Image (cartoon, one colour):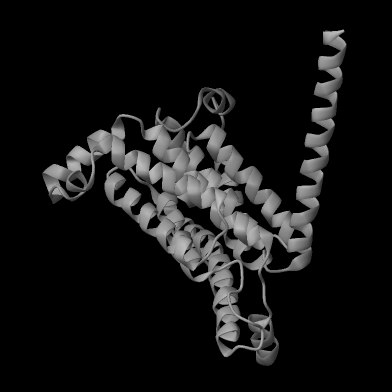
Length: 291
């Protein structure tokens, strides 16, 4: 059994979904950087007061934001390698340093995966006969495994914490959450208005069961996509119902690391077929309106 895992660790796994997985974090950071708007300047001012004027001595707020955006966009457009991955990690680390007063747990997850991306190169740099290539393959596969384990641990720790919380056991945690105006959206408040405590207890245990079972069942090939589908629905509900879209989207994106290359290619083909059919329809509509 140990020998089997050793063989799997040394089998090259340079897949397109791994490339997309890491580039997704570049896109996420770029979008959040753009959405900050004037708040970015305020956060830089906070850095100047509390921790000195390092960033101000480097460039003005607008220039620094523009440089970070250009670097992130370059990472999205270029093929990944060790140097580019290191530069991207340093840019995201700078972003986290500047915005640490407003970051959340999801941003910490992004930073962790950006660090793993430094050692996980999607394209081999040496010949197959080289010992360095053997080390590169093993390091690449090990980082992919760590990325998958990290997702499982997030659910395991969260589920275990809820299991040992009296407020989650008796359903009052969800009840208290619904009372905070900041979290639930209008439709969720309307949906849960007048709900009884027994229903809240059932929902609490369903959440606990999912978070404790996910780290176990996601490794079983026959159940993997079922668990990922349940996770997508779970986090979409969090995004739309509890006003936490960034964390929910981050957790959904971590699922890409579990998708096999052949299944990933099927999804890409399906997306291309949809886009091709839409473009043909648009062309036909434009021709008919033009005539």
